[in-house]
Image (cartoon, rainbow over all chains, first blue to last red; front, side):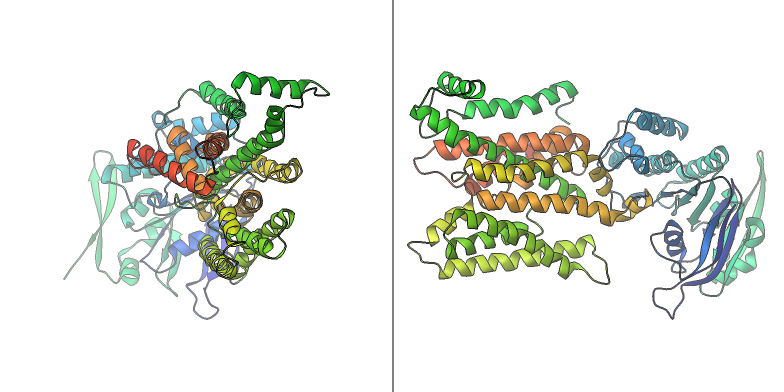
Length: 251
Length: 340
């Protein structure tokens, strides 16, 4: 079990960006973090990753996992003139000493991960020349190669086209099941949260942070509270079941 | 990537510098034919007591060999430093001189020339003031117990500019007949004053630092992704950064202390290598060591052959480096940095 207990963060000691956030995840759980710009989603992620320090609170990981966190950044930040395989190999960095290079076993693992996310054909292509969707998958493969038990993704769908958004979301779901990962991702799309995650953290500014089951947390009144926008959540039946979507009501 | 066959590349990288080393033995103002220079070199290598006391032997053994070895070390050292820095700072415009070390070392050397007029003091002072300059850069870069890459580069540029200004001041006050020409000549770079004593003193630390960067090379790949990425991969960027900066500082200050400020090698050679073998530091670092060594021997050959007075190395590295670099840049459609 992964528990995030009572965490708060502030850049100076007076103004808190967020306060007393609690989350708990079981293995295989996918949690989405949803909220307007500037409420601290990325900051929370950076704290979880250890780039920044929480002011209060702690993260606890119980059970057999070592608690290694794999990170998938927003891919458009990276300028890496390396091949896909070289990129995935970098996920092995912790297991490779300062003065050595990846060995056969590391290469095998990297190739296996490329295959699992379905991009083994891109092995020798240069990372920068790939499309946004392909880069996203390779970064997921890199996180998996680091043998992580927690997978953190920062807006994994933000730079992708409509089809690739859902390809990536499906891939995240498959990986969470296959490797029994704790997955935490941020998003701006309530639909994506509803599509993928079992639990959601709504971050609506200082006082309004609400964590719970996605189907309970994402409702019309909560969306109104955090975005100040009237919405209608609609359920649509189709041949493969039902899907939910959010429609803003203007005027 | 121009060179795809791995075994061919390995052979070229190992044999190239050795071949150029041997061919260069005969080159210079005092020309020695190849068979003669080979004979002298190998008889010196394999016989315990040489019988030959000719001028040729003396030229090759006492002048050319230390000089060529020094050229190899300096060329390999500067270009591997440039490659490591360009990778670490994620910036193709960076050269090993970016943190102000070479200007600092140059300043120390010039001071020693003015006050001590002793080549050993020039060597010692410039090495120490190179180290001093990076300490000053650390001091200015450190705020709130942290040193960011950007603040380090900016403070390096500040320190470098300060020492450059101080060098100009010393040139201004130096005796224009007696001291100024030797200062200017030294600053432009030369291998001519090298002795076996000095060579053995600098070669061990330079080789050690080159080897350090060689074995560290895969980490430079990771460093080139940026600080947050390094952290996300479970490593500590602050520590890894010092593991590049310290050997580079030692290499650059030693190079300046024995041969003056030789520019452009640390900027052009890494680019040329990147065009040849791509951006993976696993291949790029050995490639830049080897090509840097070859390039510097050839530059030094030219410097002592084309005219009766030796042409300063700094001028040749700039002129030849820029021309070669320019044509390669044109051929590769903008360099290997963006898409390899």
